[in-house]
Image (cartoon, rainbow, N blue to C red; front, top):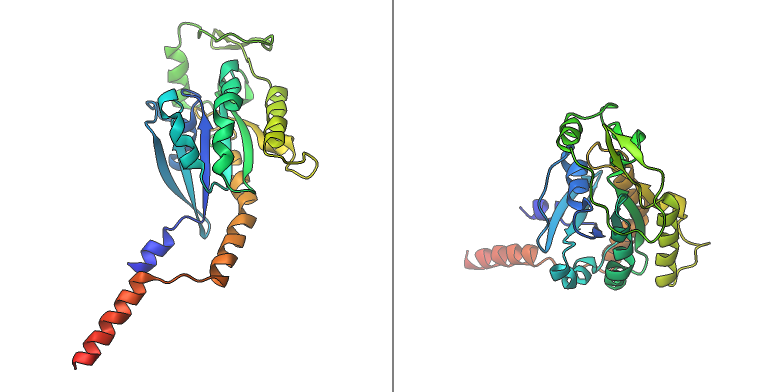
Length: 263
């Protein structure tokens, strides 16, 4: 049992932040369970543990609803990486990242890594309609498209949307471009007091994904895990140099001493 508890201890924390309905939970399910799920809004937060090689990565899925906003800073405490998630068809979801969620990362690690991720790319990008795992349009996507008989109501956009894309007869607008995401990434770095020249490049830290088809989902998480590795190794080295007392092992040792004394 002591070995099992140690094996499951997280080596690093990754947190997903973003407004409700941008697909944070769906991204997580796609990566951890290899399939798409229609999910309900997360209440508070949810914790997942992902085995990545010899390391245990804890992934926190946070609620985007306004009433749970205050919990975000608690979930971000000690985070080694944060994924700012928006919906590529909803400009306001990008705006909310800077207005509501950026300040929550004040409790993250000083060397925390930040990624800006536009989900639902399958609604606007033909390449994203192809499943990353199978190389073809997934069955759940086909059913999803069949159910979409009316165009989405899009929120107000302060900048002109990109060229409409046709998806099975449904016209959708891409309201957030890759350049918009890159610009936000630059503002995140400035907010954190980081120099862009010495930070990870925006082109590497801005992604467009589809939880529906799996497009870029593995790439997103695996890239972040690779970038988190130096932090993990540094943390392990610090723990070795400053060992803590294992209370469970002390209890076992005390019990053995007591038995030998009785004999």
